[in-house]
Length: 138
Ligand SMILES: [Zn+2]
Image (cartoon, rainbow, N blue to C red; front, side, top):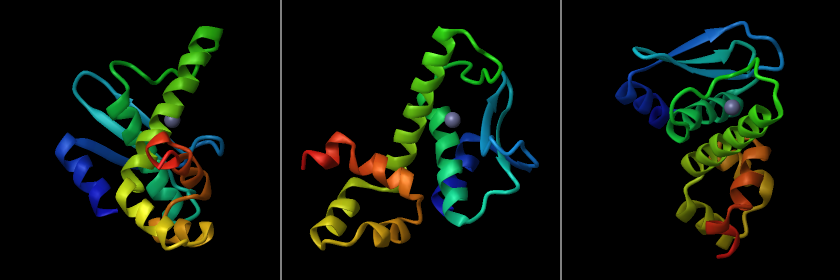
């Protein structure tokens, strides 16, 4: 968690917890002057908290300009929205699961469930990380 909080401080991003609709775990919002990450009050555990926070930071680092368009429904917009979600997930996966550390664990043949615990992430994020080319082609 410390690493994530450090980044928030360095980048001057405010973290807010709110009651969000159940389909929303977090939102990244930026305006000219201020940047916010809003996280749901109802994230079930520390793993989901870390993964969601890292995902929203991923939006910040992988998206140039305005990347929050929740009400956008045209086909092109949906396509780019999905692309942005994937980019944010990949950023989060790389940040929370460093390559060398993961490869070391894989060499020790640590089972999938233990890896989830070890990196304090969700199984979904670990699956994304394991499927990324810098790890899977090793
Ligand atoms: Zn997202």
